[in-house]
Amino acid sequence: MYRRNNTEEQPPVETKVWECSSEDCKGWIRDNFTSSDKPSCPLCGSEMKEGTRMLQAINNPGNHQ
Ligand SMILES: [Zn+2]
Image (cartoon, rainbow, N blue to C red; front, side):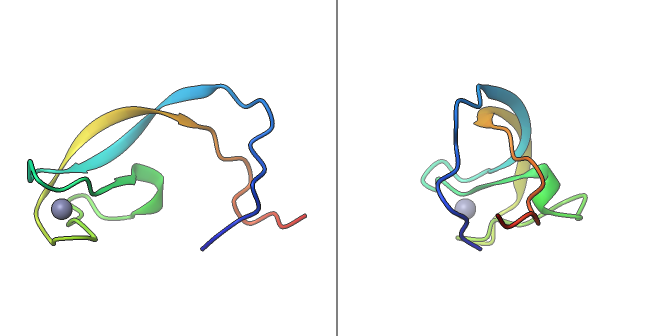
């Protein structure tokens, strides 16, 4: 799922994410990209823990311009 580079001046916002519990793994996903209460890491399959990251806001993910 790739979108065009359309990051015009959107300030990062604190966003709820899931982060891989493995120290060696950089896997993480946005909370709103999963419907699971306990998602597993897409990279290594480990448990994930809740966290936050400063991320660009995503507006209308389904809106292709
Ligand atoms: Zn992982």
